[in-house]
Picture 1: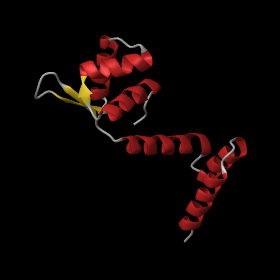
Picture 2 (picture 1 turned 180 degrees about the horizontal axis):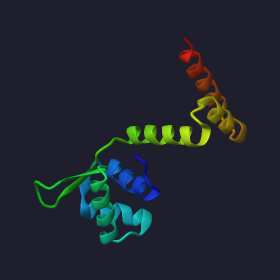
Picture 3 (picture 1 turned 45 degrees about the vertical axis):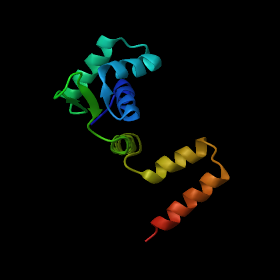
Picture 4 (picture 1 turned 180 degrees about the vertical axis):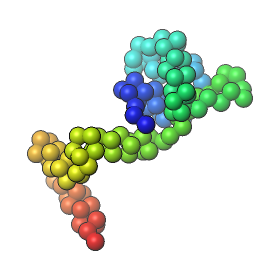
Length: 120
């Protein structure tokens, strides 16, 4: 599952609302993107065809929801990025971030603890 930036935007709206009718999703997404009702409906329909969105058609108006939870999508995205860009080396990825980004003392301590806890 590879998500485009726009698919992430739609999924974030679905996660934020917990699933919603089209009208609410249009309002939420319009504030963030300026998308029209037709654009939102097009994305939802395409994403349903890709297995990303579920449409409950038992009542009207239909309720749209994400098939996958946020953490499952984040995990997939992390794994894809890790393998595509760093050949699967988590250490290289972390080292690159730490060289380029400043982290707080609390973040350093939390990272050290996570690394210590992972040792077998």
